[in-house]
Image (cartoon, rainbow, N blue to C red; front, side):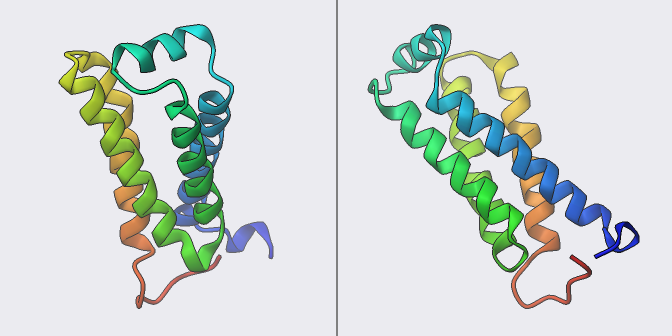
Length: 121
């Protein structure tokens, strides 16, 4: 595959996958401040592993074109949960990033809907 065959839709999907991969690492190996956030939000001590696993799964699915739609759908679900969590706890400024990533996930999912003609890759 040459660089000229690389579409902006694929670049967006790979950037989103990279975001979720970084998020997976950050949620798997949480610093004390993030662990305190999870506790303040009422999640059990192990819940950050669930979040990390879901983000890693989204990243992997986003990187594989035939299942990219499902990666985007999982990304929407994860970011929806993150946005709802911070909004319900009155941390509205912290909702901006999840909402933006949720919107990007929707766009990636839209361009990778099952049954539509796809461009390369």
